[in-house]
Amino acid sequence: MAERDVKSKRLGRGLAALIGDSAPEAAAAPEKFFRDTRKVPIEHIEPNPRNPRKTFTEKDLGDLAESLRSKGIVQPILVRPAAGKTDRFEIIAGERRWRAAQRAGLHEAPIIIRDVTDQEALELAIIENVQRADLNPIEEAMGYEQLTADFSYSQGELAKVIGKSRSHVANTMRLLKLPNSVKDYLAEGLLTAGHARALITVEDPAALAELIVEKGLTVRDAEKISQDPDALARMKGDKAPGDKRQKDADTKALEKRLSDTLGLKVSVGHKPGKETGDLKIKYTSLEQLDELCRKLGVETR
Image 1 (cartoon, one colour):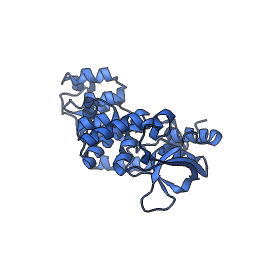
Image 2 (cartoon, helix red, strand yellow):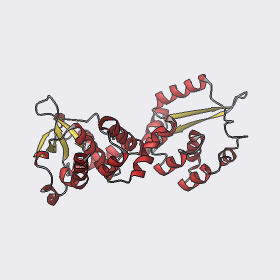
Image 3 (spheres, helix red, strand yellow):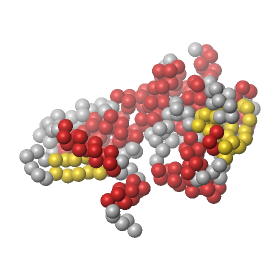
Image 4 (spheres, helix red, strand yellow):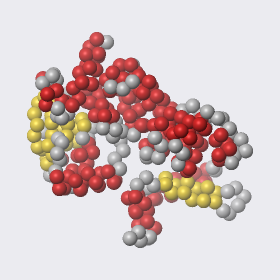
């Protein structure tokens, strides 16, 4: 435990030094972390399969690629030597920059090489992304879960490592118990962590999540509904909680085919016994909307 406490303090205090942003802190970091800084071919760098960040939006990468074309990569990518490979490096922090650099057609990238273990690399990746607010709530929760599962961290120890409160860690990890449809909304940025915390306590989190997205409800609205068991039914016009009809297998199959074809979340609301209904297509960026219009043959400009 004492060894882990020392390591936690080191990582929490010395992150800036480890990723090369703070010269004064660098002197305090352990010697073993530092190797050198250089430029290497883009193809000599590979992503870390344990990176907690999984979502990279097209717009985000496109904007950064434009910046890199004119300015280049200002902040080096933090890497470690790739196991069993010569002159190959695995990203610890900076995968978004590496992806955008490829889009920008850059042939080289500046790197900072560090000698760290699998555990230290995962800790650094989570801390760096959390401090930059680059992770969506589900990615953050999955990163915490990976540390606890792979390296037997308690929530208290994990809180020290990442510089957050124990309650923040506990509440974030509880998000993983939500239904997959809710986690999808969180990953797409349609729900915030504040919304999700309100959803954890309700009987039907999927229904409330759908209502939040459809009506653009605030976190405060969601909290009020979560405290009133009948509020959700009243707002949706249902007869009673749990009265929501389940979609049949054919409708679900059609939704999946449409979603796979369009690359967007599609919902078919067919009214039983009638020939009417609605078709909802959800997009999370203007680029996705433009792509949908292109596929439908609609001119947007």
